[in-house]
Image (cartoon, rainbow, N blue to C red; front, side):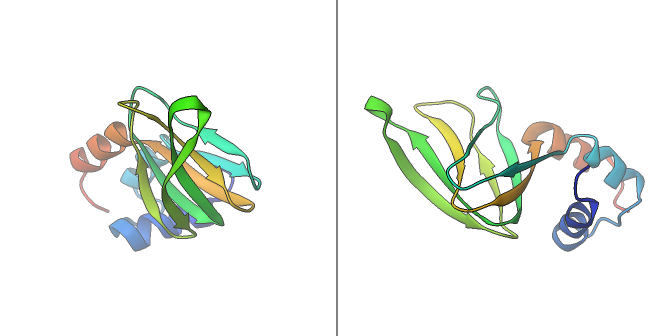
Length: 120
C-alpha cells in the first residue's frame, strides 16, 4: 500500500477500526491506491459501485452525457468519502482538479467484509 498512514487515518477516523487489527488487514486487501494529476481521469469498475477515500487533493465526479459531454455531479476534497455508482443511465468518472491521492475499494466487498468482522 503506497500510503499506509492515510489508510490508517481513514480506518480510525471514519470507522473506529484500529490499524493492525484483523479487520484493517482484510479491508486493506481490497484497497487500491491511485495517484492522479490535474485533468487525469480515473475510471472505476463499470459493473459495480466503488467506494473512494480522497486522501489529499481535489476531484470532480462527472457523468458522461451525450456527445461526450461531462456533467459534473459533485466536487470532493481531501478527507471526503464518496461512492462512484456503476453504469446505469450514465458512466461516471473521477477527474483530478489538482494532484490527488485516492484509495479505492469495491463497495460491496468492503461493506460485506466490514459487516462480517468484529470491530477492532
